[in-house]
Every structure is written in C-alpha cells, then in structure tokens.
Image 1 (spheres, rainbow, N blue to C red):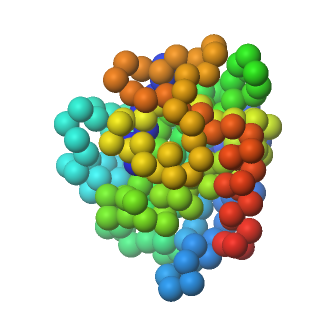
Image 2 (tube, rainbow, N blue to C red):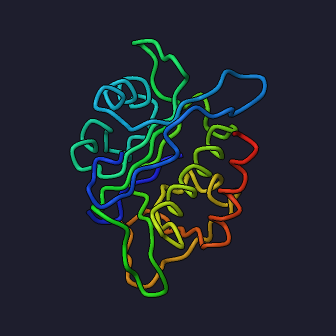
Length: 194
C-alpha cells in the first residue's frame, strides 16, 4: 500500500482538529487500535522495519516526509512496545485541502501499511479513516498517486483510476480519486468499528 507525492497530523494550521484520534475496535478477534497523530519516533520505527521490505523504486522514507507533513496520522496497537512500528500511517504534505475544478480535494501524499498487514483489513480500515478525515476537512474527494503494485486496495475500496483536472501526479505513478459517494460509503463503514 504505497502512495507517493504528486508534487511537492494535524500539525498544519489549516487542517481542523480530528475526531479520528481515539481508540477503534478494528476486529472482534484483535485488541483495539489507536489512531493518533504521527510522530518522528513512529517514522523512525516504520523506516527501520518497513524500509528494507519496500521495492527499490520507492526511495522515500517516513523520516524525510515528517518535516513536511501537515496532516499526519498513524494507526497502532493501544500500547505499542518501543520496538513496534505502527500498523499504518498516512499524511498530506499540502498545507491545506486543494481547491480544484470540480471540488475541494484532500491530497493523500503518503500512505503505507505495515508489510505484514498489507492486503488485510488494516489497509481497508485505514482507507476508511482517510475518507473520514477528508470529509472532516470539508473535501468532497481524495486525490492520490500510487505505485502500480498497490492498486488492488484502491480498486477494492472504490477509488477510480483517473487524473483530476488541475492536479498532476508524478511520472510512473497511477492517479486515483475517491469521489464524494465513495468517501461517504467508506466513512460509514467506520460505524462498525465504534
């Protein structure tokens, strides 16, 4: 589930506070998860564990992303050990939502799921959190550019592979958009996790 920047936590001043930062019942057979603001320490842990498992064509590291992240979240176990990486992380490096032709858009610049959880409910749950976050920010869609290997999660969760007018993705990446109806449907799935 790798997503990279197109061009270019709640640490940004142009994003509203989030109701996502709390405990979630992700799966009845597992302990609850915690959605929280991403931190530099989480980035270091994720890079140490996830980095060696990334394809070589994925040059970025969370430690390098962190200084530019404006809206940054992580999902982890309730009491992660000092050795444990988060289950997933995502962020936007844009200082605010984008005003694009056709609607306000939340730009998802980076999204990654722990390698052992890729293709699992953790990925879909995190996408639902991203959808809810976009709606919290007043966006009617999410735009992102992803490596081709990660397209299954986007296809499975209602994204359309297309380039939105007024937005450009980096070469070699696939442009995706979650339109308003998909965001609302994904957000609604979180009601099962309350």
